[in-house]
Image (cartoon, rainbow, N blue to C red; front, top):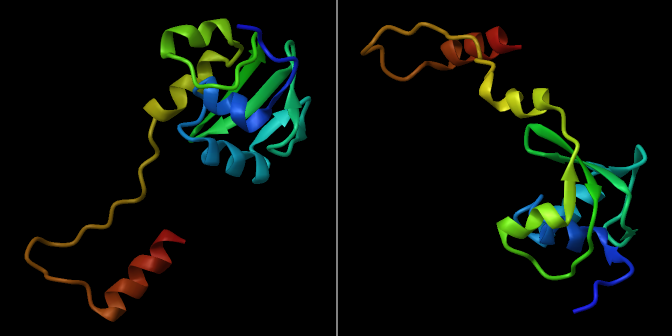
Length: 126
């Protein structure tokens, strides 16, 4: 089977398993979370071999180099043939270091917060 010369970027992101669905990939492109050469791109833009993509997926900003083009989703073992992961290791450590919201002590059995308590909690979080 011949690989195409160019593929839509939303199709490629989905086929290379950077996003779970093609709709999520297209939404990420429309939101400016996918970039080529630090320029936001549209989902219909064609991606070519050798281009470096930067995509925000959740808490991680993935940087990948396109090695192969496909229009259909491939198995996880074949993803290495499609892309070279250039993401720094520090990006993968981000989700493991959670930031906790400030803890507000409420005595056990105090019941639901009143409207006044709720306002205090909201003001504290700001």
